[in-house]
Length: 143
Image (cartoon, rainbow, N blue to C red):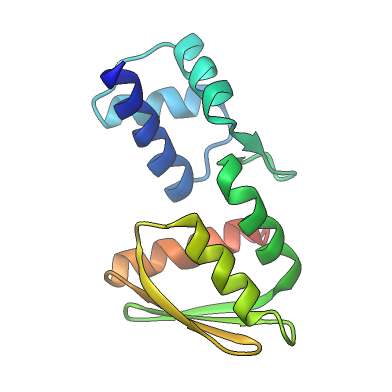
């Protein structure tokens, strides 16, 4: 049971960080993190965790679907400077998008400040800021 929980936590981190398109890719990434498992095991984990595929063919966590929809519909641009990420949204959408990001409890984010159409995200470091920006672009369908 503990091994399954740890493996699923690794899947959660991999899916949030990388653009995983197939179960085989996920098996390979898990092996890189020290988890030896079969595609059948990964398939069961995907079902247990409620992973879904975006229209672009990339896996996303069920709890991130709301965030993905908000970002896809409301975010107009995203830029990074050091450990800061500046997100521009349509008018009036800044606080809603920031609330959805907070609800997703992303490990890379320390906190955010939201205005009417702008969100300032403070990441744990520059690498984490890059991951935040990549994930936002992934949700926007921009690779």
